[in-house]
Each structure stands twice: as C-alpha cells, then as structure tokens.
Image (cartoon, rainbow, N blue to C red; front, side):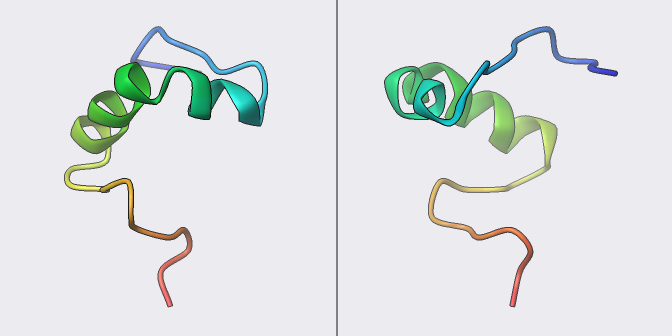
Length: 41
C-alpha cells in the first residue's frame, strides 16, 4: 500500500540511497527530517 512508488528492500538501502529516499520521506510525512526519530519521544 504505497502512494509513492519507491521501496527499500532492506535497512542498508536507506543508507546507500539516502539522497533519493530522504527528500521523498520528508515530503510524504510533511517534515520528517533525517535527524528525526520514530516514534517521537
């Protein structure tokens, strides 16, 4: 169930392709930055 169209098959993909994923995640979640933690404390 994705409205974005990109997938990370494993955690390492977020590191390798962070330049691609980070802006998409930020936009999709309305301001979720690379330094943010989930869930927020």
